[in-house]
Image 1 (cartoon, rainbow, N blue to C red):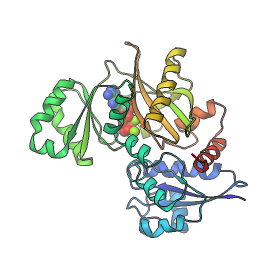
Image 2 (cartoon, rainbow, N blue to C red; image 1 turned 120 degrees about the horizontal axis):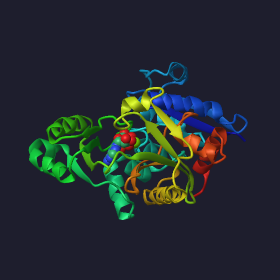
Image 3 (cartoon, helix red, strand yellow; image 1 turned 135 degrees about the vertical axis):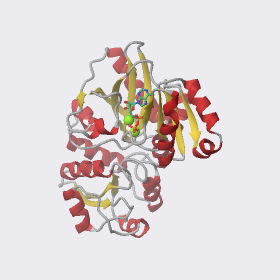
Image 4 (cartoon, rainbow, N blue to C red; image 1 turned 45 degrees about the horizontal axis):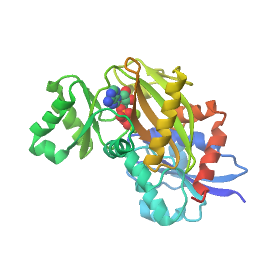
Length: 339
Ligand code: ADP
Ligand code: MG
Ligand code: MG
């Protein structure tokens, strides 16, 4: 019997369009002799679109409006064998949709509520990984109310980390709201921007030199495997939104030209992080490698990484001998696995 799969795409975050691109790739790759796939696009307003609007959104790649309230629509997820929540960022990758599907009793691809929520939050991730002994940059937390009532305390904390530093909303992705702050004079503007997007903000010391950015894919549930390591190169001060989404600004190198022991250490640390964060199914774990000092620092864990046929995560597993179609099939199998 064919498995009935509900593919959720779009969503309320700034990565709506990226998700639609990934969804088109997954839709054409899931083998039709094994799976009966129904896509549902979620609008930026959080509404679940009926089939014709979903089709139109997938074809045009534009954020649609209209649709039904999530709770009304979610009931129709019943009857599916599994859901593939191909959603990036808040309200999709952060445990919210995972909670809904858990309540509905439907298996789904990827991490559960805990792994999704903790990995989405840069502060919680840092805390969990610190207790697992995984190396990271120095960092500090700031909360909006504190920034409003006692900005001096927040400025003090930044000064202790030293400049340049990074200011980031705790729960976003795609570099949205992130600033590299070179001097104390520029701190307030960066904090105001980050606090306009999130109640909690992370301040991070910059790596000692501009880091190399290396990434590894993890696949599996309780016996996960690591892909080869890939590297992103780009011509910009840091990997900001524009560099990420402007064609031709960044290039991917698989495998990353690294000493074998460094690559092995990256894979080991990534597997340890995946377990510590209680991830499942898949994750892309991103590191900074500071060549000058030999330091390897874990930057972040993405529980639903970009998933077009040319995205890093599928490319990493392709290099490991698992083609795109085999990879998505494997992810659905992992969703259905007894754990
Ligand atoms: P996002 O989740 O939006 O991708 P990241 O934490 O990965 O946010 O930061 C985006 C980019 O900013 C990184 O890929 C890197 O180029 C740069 N960056 C972030 N934090 C640091 C840091 N502490 N030191 C050096 N570069 C950083
Ligand atoms: Mg991220
Ligand atoms: Mg990142």
